[in-house]
Image (cartoon, rainbow, N blue to C red):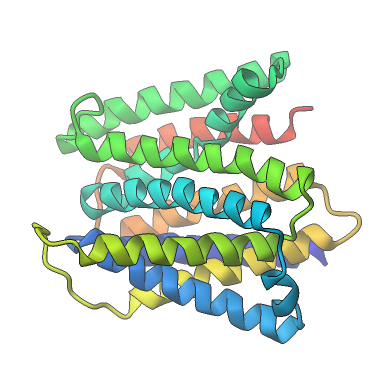
Amino acid sequence: MWLGWILASCVVLSLYDLSKKASVRDNAVFPTLLGSTVSGWLAVTAFLLFRGEFAATLSLPPRHIALLLAKSGIVGASWTATYMALRTLPITCAAPIRATGPLWTLAGAIVLFAEVPTLVQAAGMAMVVAGCVLFSLSARHEGIDFRHNRAVWFAFLGTVLGSCSALYDKHLLKGLGIPTMTVLWWFLGGMCVIYAVAAALPRRKTTFSWRWTIPLVGVLLALSDACYFNAVSVPDARISVLSMIRRSSVVLTFFLGGAVFHETNLRRKAVALAAILVGVMTLCLAK
């Protein structure tokens, strides 16, 4: 049962990535983010109302609400950096960079929680780093210099901030016991306010154009998370396996994105992607 849910989450997550690229390519970032976030927040609201959990979502202590709004700032910064990268960077470069998230999460756990990586985890980290080096070499064939390209740095910044959010989730979900959909509703709501203010600011260099994929982004995010949480709720489901399968959505994103957006240099980048995925799977399965 859990396999069907996690595969569905994997496919929807890939479509979510493609919709993000289609929405923000050569488009104004903050209005695009606002439309996507509002649609996701409305989808989560509908889900909570359907489950009869909306009243409980609103009845959190003020301290918990403040912590969730702080998460809005972290995730808001992560998404902003990611969209800044996707606006100009090929998705076959941006998606694999995003897949390096477990490396930064483990690095954060080592620094913040004094966790000591095992030999297997260290090997996985080395593979991810090697994959990133291969990507930097292959990207040069498209005129992308990893050291000096601002979009590449935005992609890595978005990934690192996303890993910070994952570490913060450990405190919210396990330490405080806040339900996952409640966390999602509150931080998306906070991000709607942040992006509304940012979108209202003048002096945007890029004009905004409405695209049907913009609201689709938020709906796909909510649907992917709902499928993932259903998979997690199955008693015999292993989180490490679920995480590994879900992160493999980058493969689907890579090849579909390459075809849909007519991107090039796929063979060289596929080798680098394979190295990153081997490292990520090693990190997911390592004890």
